[in-house]
Length: 122
Image 1 (cartoon, rainbow, N blue to C red):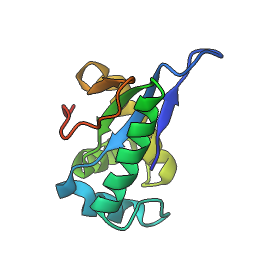
Image 2: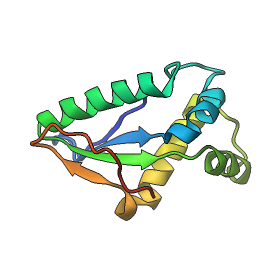
Image 3: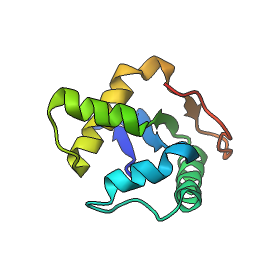
């Protein structure tokens, strides 16, 4: 799970970005990531990890943004940018989506411990 935190200088993190995978996309995304590992074996395992991480961040008052990753869009982006499918490319795409769709990404502010059942997709 790649969770990115945006920081401004030495200040506390402004936003913690979390990749979001729909259950219907998970197998394809896992297949894309399998060349260098890093994804849990099942959607339920991934979801459990994300739920725990999100709950911990929210409990500590952090702001969380979910960034929905779609495999077909990612593959199109690879072709458009001439990149190979690597861990670094996936991280760059994740940040690209976050920057491009910032206004359309679900934002959850800390203070509570609930994880949304569904969030807005970019």
